[in-house]
Length: 55
Image (cartoon, rainbow, N blue to C red; front, side, top):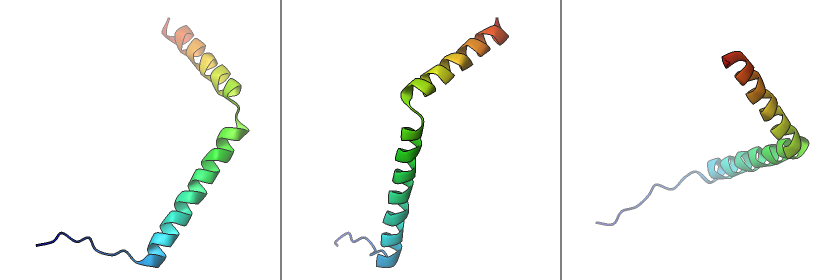
């Protein structure tokens, strides 16, 4: 007996791929808007604040 997978609706598959592409594009734009230096500096500030509060 052969194992078969159900065929997905082509419109549903196309829409899913479109949504995934839009999400990937939005993620890329977000990462370009915040350079690595800014993220690193913000992380350092959060760590310093946490140390002050904890210690």
